[in-house]
Length: 125
Image (tube, rainbow, N blue to C red; front, top):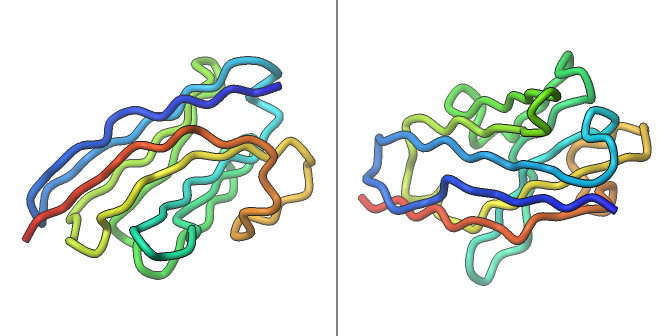
C-alpha cells in the first residue's frame, strides 16, 4: 500500500507561482511512475504532468507546458509540481498519483493505482 499526501495548494492571483508537494509512504516510492492530475468543478479529472521512476522522462499537458515543472526527490519520497504564471483556468483540485506497474502510461488516470486526497489551487484574475 502507498499513501500519498499533497500539500502546497492555496489561493493566488493570476501570474503568481505555487509549488505543490506530494509525499509518499509505504512501498518503495522510487519504483513508481508519478503523475499530477487536476479536476475542476463539473469537469473530468485531467492529466497535468508525469515523471518516470528516475526522473529521466517527463510529460506535460499542452495547457501547462512551459509554465509547470515536475520533479522528484526519491531520497525524500516526494514529487513536486512547480507552477508558474498561473491562470484562472488552472483553478482545480490537484491530485498526485502513483503507478507501480512499470508500464509508463502517463496520461491515463486508470494507469495509477494510488491517489492522494487532493489539494485545492484557486487562481483569481
